[in-house]
Length: 322
Ligand code: UDP
Image (cartoon, rainbow, N blue to C red; front, side):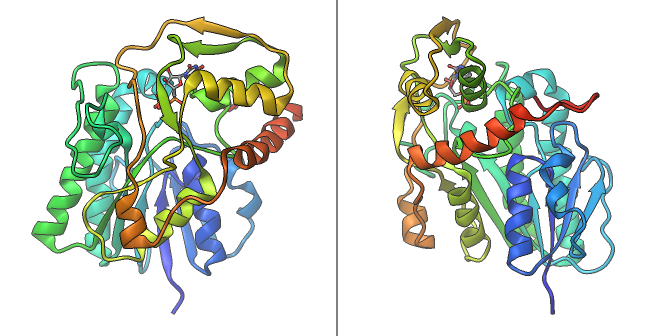
C-alpha cells in the first residue's frame, strides 16, 4: 500500500526539499503551510503531481487530513533570527500548540512522528562540539528565547507522547543548513552574504566575525532525516556538518566563489548570538550510518546557481521572498 506523509511547513526551505524526497520515494505527500514564512514557489514544480497535495492551514489550529497517514514530519516554524524576532508569538505558538496538534493527529492516525528540533536547544554552548547529552545554555528571556524554548518544549511534549501514549517519535536536532530555495531576506548569514555578493553590496559580518558555525548542505540533511525516520532512535539526534569555520571565513568563501569585489562591513553582534557551534555527529554515524557528503564549495556552487536564477527573475507583486 502506498505510504502517506504529512509535512507541516512543507512550503518552507527544508519542508519543500522533504516533499521532493518523499515524492521520489513513492509517497503520497500532504504539504501543510500557512505561508507566513513558506512560499508556494518552493513547491510549484510538484504542484501538478497527482500524489502531491497542498493544504493552506495554520498548524496551531485544529488540523485534519482525510484518510490514513503513515508519518508526520513537523517542520512548521519561523526558523531564522530575523523571522522569530518579527514573529515571536507565532514562533512560540507553532513550537508549542502546533507541536501538540501535530502529535495529536499522529496519535489519532497511528502515524510515526518526526520533530524538527534545532541546535538552538544548546543555546550559547559551554560544551564544544555539542553532543546530544548536553542540556544547553539557553537564555529563556532573551530575543532568541521564543525559538529556543519553543523547540525545547516541543522536544519535551514529543517525548511525553512517546512515553505516555507509546507514539513512535523521532527528534532531529538540525544544525545550520543551506541550499537552494533559502529565503533571500531571512537575515541568515548565507542568503545575506550571497545576495550581497551578487548585488555588489558590502557583506554584513556581525561582530568581528570570529563566532563559528558549521554549515550542512540541504541534501545531506534530508538524507539524515530520511534515515532517522526509518530508524528506531527515539532520543534526539544531531544532524549537521561538523566542518566548523568562523563567519568571517565563511563570508570570504562566498566572495571567492562568486568572484565578487564586495567589501566586508562589520555590524553589531546580535544579542545572545552563539559564539561557537559544531555538531558532534558520532551518534548519527553509529546509529544511522550517516555522515555529510557534499563539500562546502560544491554546496555553495549549487546554491549560487539558484540564487543567480532567482535574482534574475522579476519579483511578482505582493510576495515576501526576496
Ligand atoms: N551573520 C552575519 N551577517 C549576517 C547574518 C548573520 O555575520 O548578515 C552571523 C550571525 O551573527 C551568526 C552567524 O552569522 O553569528 C550565523 O547566523 P545565521 O542567522 O545564519 O544563523 P544562527 O546560527 O545564528 O541561527
